[in-house]
Picture 1 (cartoon, rainbow, N blue to C red):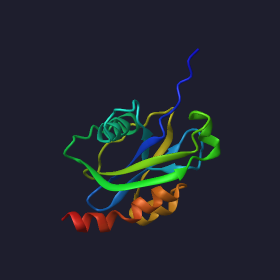
Picture 2: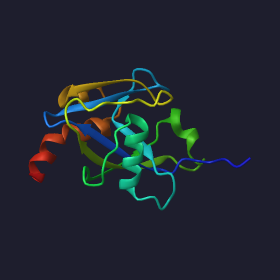
Picture 3: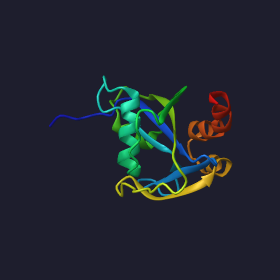
Picture 4: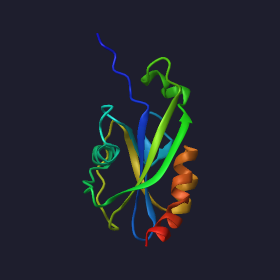
Length: 152
């Protein structure tokens, strides 16, 4: 049997509406843990934007076009939580997380992956940041208004 470990390079995708309502997902494996879309690369050579679009579709059913997805140019390097470390090769302790944004119209339908998430909420950006269990996720959401101003 060959063990398949997760690649310690991932994406975080903040999905939001023009009114800055942010989509939050509750993890199925850790009820009470809320987050934005996240996921690791499937292969070492998978482009990060492809990882982001794939994860958005797998976790929410939202099909993002390459034009809709924005690379925010933020990379978080953090220690992998011990509860999830078994998913990585034994010597791996840190992950690099690349942050993307995806603006969708208000009322966009969400179809959860039941193995990954229990429920979702659309929340004003500050409330969404407060709900995050991950500090890097909360920080990305708090950057949302500034990132939108600089891209306008």
